[in-house]
Length: 171
Image 1 (cartoon, rainbow, N blue to C red):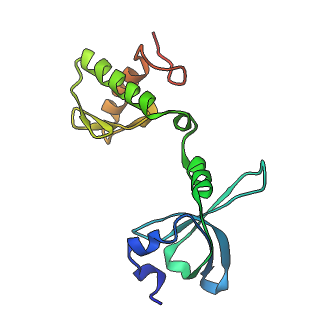
Image 2: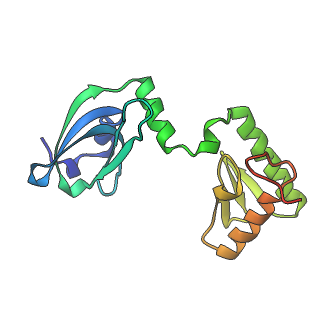
Image 3: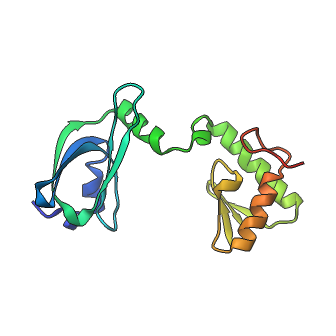
């Protein structure tokens, strides 16, 4: 078998949503469900679910330390759902596609009303070609390398009168 780091991303993808035993250097062993594999470092993100009500544990095994990966159990839709819930922000879990579309349209109209140039690029709003807003289109979903523009647009997003209770308007 090729070494772990020499595998291609599509080969790593075969391990996602599966319970595995990872043997690292010094024969250390880590057990858990593979959430993802970083394509640059080959690091594995493992999740260990606790029994009812317990907190799940997330561990990253760095790619250079991986000696062997053995699949213990195949995952199913329930497992995939449990993994997704761990890494999904609380406000985003309850939103359906219609609500996400409504928020995007509301924010786009609000920005245009305030004379901010905005265009849709798939599921992302691009503001003045220097800032993006991703779903669910709140202030915390804005991203830009320009901190001044980021702060001003976040303030504008928060003041949107059509915002929902989890994204309060500052009227």
